Amino acid sequence: MSSYIKFTENDMRLAKQTDLIQYMLAEHPDRVIYHTGTLRDCNHNSLVIYHDSYFRYSLHEAGDSISYLTKYQGYGWADAVSSLLEFSLGHDVTHKYKKPAAPLKSDIHTFRVPPDTGDINALQNYIINECNISNRIFRNLVYMKKLYATAVPGTGRHYACFGNADQNYYLLQNTKQSGSQKLIYTENPLGFWWFSSDTFLSINHVFSMMETNIEIYEDDYPLFICESPLDAISLYELTKESGIYVALSSLDPKNLDYAVHSFPTENLMSRPVILALSQTPAVCSNLPYQRILPMGNSWSEDLRKIHRSPMSMREVDDGDNSFVCALLDNKGNVVEYSTYQDSKNLKLIDIKISNCG
Image 1 (tube, rainbow, N blue to C red):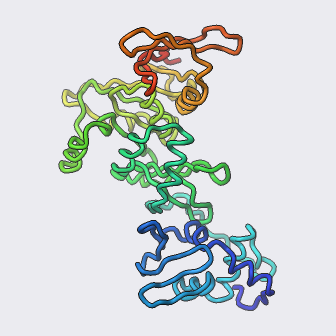
Image 2 (image 1 turned 180 degrees about the vertical axis):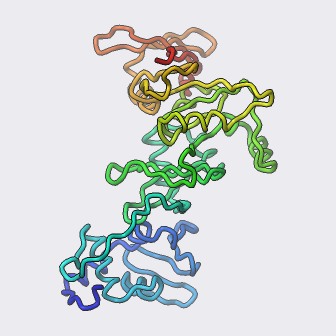
């Protein structure tokens, strides 16, 4: 323990200047919650956490970051100082004083539901402004609890969580460049994330599904199998095709088979399956499934390029709000044709299709 470490005045100053909001979201995201735009202690609703202090309105009590950790989070005084210092400096400040500890067992397989931090602004900036997902689709996914903002202890707060509560499956995508890019928390190693095009129908239809807790799809509704939730959402944005969009945990035959058989039809016939993968992995070898290919490295990349690089396309008005789009290479030669309706929403009609293998 660090109880016998002598801290300097500079140590104390740095510890008190540590961003307490960022610290709690990173180290103890399950102990805080956003409410009316402020971060609060889960056990004390009137206790608001600020960047360098806290204030408990019910008691008119204020204190610095060290006081908050010792009084409300069970820290010893020296441990609170050292923990805040480590978070601020990015390295262990007490390793020279600690006895070697027995290695902890990895908790990579430990399941816990990632907490909703309520940081909707950061999530919206990533999904809408960076990934070019429409506001309507973003709002519906959040409303259906298929998407929310979360934080990871010891890693950071900037994660988008794609949740499949029915399977206790949660895939986390880092919205910043630093840190782990992809994390999965699940009780089912074959779990997956998904949504259906029906998610974006009228609000009355959504309420009806939530009341019955049953989602029934037409037998001809295809399964679009994608590599990531962002690819699945981007593919729907590009095509607006009716269907069920699935993001696998991994490109593994067992994972694919589990997903395919998770949506049975009423007549017990096989549901159409379309592999929407960017490459040709071994998982699709010798399978009788149709395959669609993105023009770039991924569907999410295609969506970003369409929005950000309009000069790479030549448009011809075909009447009735429909257009023909010619994708040009760097020499100005036409390399792909697509048709879409209403240039504002960029609804693609044609998809580049090839057989698997």
